[in-house]
Length: 378
Image (tube, rainbow, N blue to C red; front, top):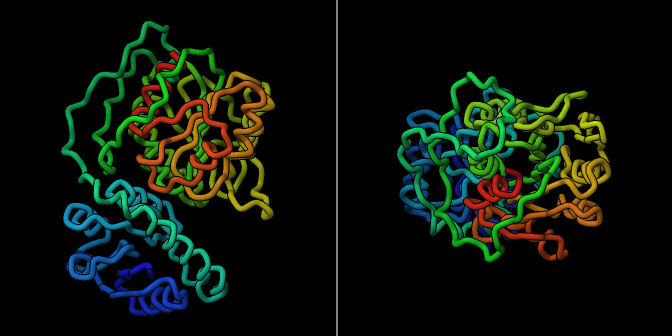
């Protein structure tokens, strides 16, 4: 059965080009178009598409507002189009918070110069997020903002990178998400003196990382590295967003950064991040031979070489199998590898690759991963 798609954009040219690209795939059917967010809501209710492609800047109602209404009234996987700018990144992250599943850069030049590449990428994205549709029946709208809650105060001495006199960062309100799934069957972890926590993710990762990292206290005792498949223009804005929401510090990694407790370093888009035995970060140019820039396998592999059995690696939601070979190296060195469970994933690809390769020491739901990281490290 063909994947039914609703195309939403105020640009007639872009609507036509996206519709033409999608319609060229015999397993995709464009069932309608809309020129603004209000029309998008009406069409989503009437046509019940499997996937909606959504622009942000539109008259009458913008894309983020439309996504929020759609998630409340007829939950449907949404693929956002965004500009490759800092502001475009911020808006896209807001859209993901509102409930969009994934995004693609809106680049007219790429459509003109590389039509086949654009067609392949767009159709792959549509097919992939259409498979997340079955989870949208359990979608819950964003909860009202909750009163700030104090950070956990374990008996460990403070390892916070912030001054002890600084106010504790409040816990953020829950991000838009699917209803919590039942916990996976893995038992709670045993405590270990991990020297590094490494987290890799792709589709669905921005919201998943936010859910995990906001559960960590300011005195978290281990350094953290984050590998999220994301364009170069987006990672700085994403790191800034996480830093504002979390009690730990978060920044986009730079060459020469030193790992330290309570600091999470996000791999920059378009490049590769490696770690050496001295705890220094090396940022390398993105190798064109690699599909992912940044690549989870590369960072995991360098962590395995540098830290032996002292790494806790976590693989969250995402397409493909990036992270599997790096996890294999970590397991060979005696480190621990966790995977997100299928029920709480947006796309059960990367965690499934870990589980199917028998590399997962534990499988946890997204809502449990953060607290289990704290239990394992503090």
